[in-house]
Picture 1 (tube, one colour):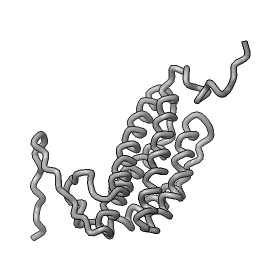
Picture 2 (cartoon, rainbow, N blue to C red):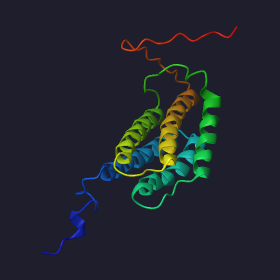
Picture 3 (cartoon, rainbow, N blue to C red):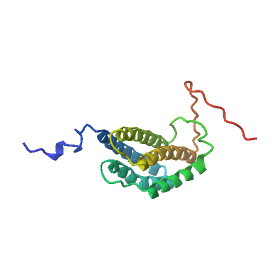
Length: 180
């Protein structure tokens, strides 16, 4: 019996390699990024919307860079690093503590993206135990998780919503040394 493609959602689904889990996780990441973009557009914060539109295709390139040809470049990483610095320059006071993932719809969606990027990073580690993985993919995914965090804080800042610090009962916080 001939297989009908409409009954297959992904051609590699039956593989045992972690590559499949990584690819599906990064699909989830890009989908959540699309949801975040919708929320950011509702709040009309053009700089974040523009940056998300630039990041979306690169997130798909991360996906293909494990099974196929490496499609994430040093220029992509440098651009993302510059964008990270831009957001940090605006929210540096608000990110001194761990904060609860709350605020505007867009901020909450960006916090979900951060979580998805971290999950993608973790699965990429599993892939690296099975095959060679270019280091730039780890760098990009780690930075991507962090930029989603500062973007979320930036969205809240623009909306006038204060961050709510999270104080852990499990892990003691080190006191910061004051500059003398």
